[in-house]
Length: 270
Ligand SMILES: NC(=O)c1ccc[n+]([C@@H]2O[C@H](COP(=O)([O-])OP(=O)(O)OC[C@H]3O[C@@H](n4cnc5c(N)ncnc54)[C@H](OP(=O)(O)O)[C@@H]3O)[C@@H](O)[C@H]2O)c1
Image (cartoon, rainbow, N blue to C red; front, side, top):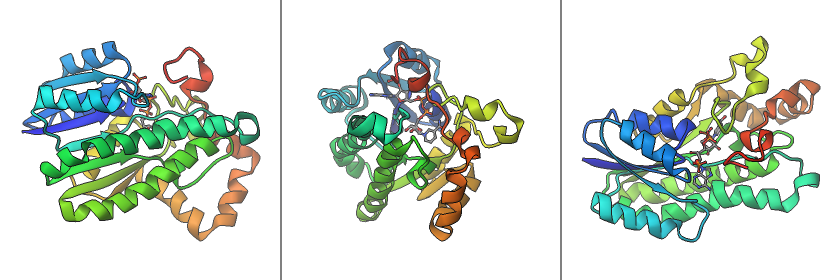
């Protein structure tokens, strides 16, 4: 038996990850996100024991609710933590300012750190166990109008690297997944999917779910999805002026895709 908790499981990469993990014999799943009906429907559809906690991970009650749920429903056991919940609100710094940076940090970094701190004792007790942090290729390469999102993902990447080294002796493997463009509810990538020239850049949530499996139970330290996105990260270090030239050219504007939060102020991500 092994217990896996996936945040952001109501849709997109998190839901695909829950479906992927449910294929492993003996798995119990804990699904976390804000939308209860989505979580309930997914939990009911899975072929294994699956429970859920409908909570805003940035709220003060989140940690206690998740801890208490694990105790009550899964005997206080946790073998795999997938920190996947996240969002992006586009905007240049001059217009969106510190407030936009703060809300990205709150969800994409602070909430991950706080949840990991709360659950690390359970993961150590269950060792060998694993954490997977879902970062982004934007945690290696930043585009215009995504500075706040990139700042939160750069922070997550740096912290994850340190945690990998710290938890190794305790038997808690810390893996990281860095997706490129993946068409989901929150990140529809419409601008790229519309054009034959850029459609090939867009991946599927199921591909990221497989990478999350590899970076968790599979023991890989990091995975780009698709793998060729690693070239962007390498080029940022080895040829920074080339990357700057590409990312400030007119053609680069499509690379700052709009998100659900930008397109619909009534979306749950907004
Ligand atoms: N798709 C991409 O192109 C892409 C690329 C690189 C990295 N990523 C990363 O991959 C992760 C998943 O993204 P996705 O594409 O699957 O996005 P998505 O479709 O918008 O899903 C985001 C998930 O996070 C949950 N969530 C958002 N705010 C939350 C909060 N305050 N508390 C609890 N849960 C919250 C959402 O559920 P509720 O609305 O129900 O709360 C949803 O389940 C994110 O960390 C994202 O940064 C995505």
